[in-house]
Amino acid sequence: MKQILIIEDDINIAELEKDYLQLNGYTVEIAQDGEVGFKKALLGIYDLIIVDLMLPKKNGFEIVRELRGKFEIPIIIVSAKNEDIDKIRGLGLGADDYITKPFSPSELTARIKSHIMRYERLAGVKIPADIISHKGLEIHTDSHKVFVNGKQVQLTTTEYEVLVFLASNPNLVFTKDQLFNSIWGEEDFGDTATVAVHIQKIRKKIEKNPSNPDYIETIWGTGYRFNS
Image 1 (tube, one colour):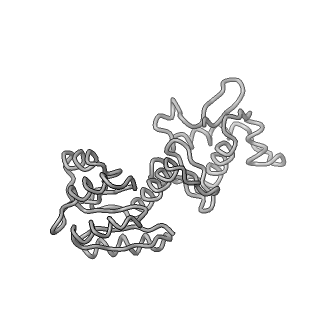
Image 2 (spheres, helix red, strand yellow):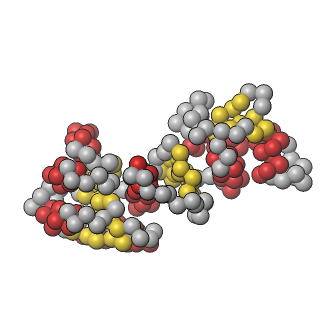
Image 3 (cartoon, rainbow, N blue to C red):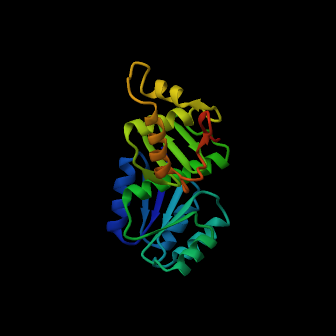
């Protein structure tokens, strides 16, 4: 079970984060001032640290700077300070992400999952087989959830099935007929044109530039493939 340290002096926010993370399977500890939080972080037992900036005794900038000199684990700043200069400074000191209050607990959880998996991947830790991950795209086949750069995207059941099928068979080209038969079934009397419609909808949700996709490529005159 992954362990998270929250360094946050606002106990209401800290407890909200803790409750939501525990519901998602994390073990969580809270420190309400910078010095205590920093000492806990030095134990080296945490998989990710969440830190506020405006803390008593030791501010978040100091914590990030000093921890980054000792550990490579993900650090996420969660702060009410929303000026670009604060974000630039925090990220420049080594934070992996910067989330501005108020925030969505579900978004925070998604980003935590993304950063932990990215860290484990870079560190050579085996990623569970129920996650398909590629260039910021993560498909959680156990929960049927899809994330792009840590943010969850909502796909219909069929859109999800098309994406999983392609992502599970990277670099292979599939015709519209093959995709239609694989997803809808050979007994379905629908039109294979629906494949193109679903691909277009998926691209709008997961691609940075749907007209120049990174993930699902059109092979003109043939079909589609997922780039790995």
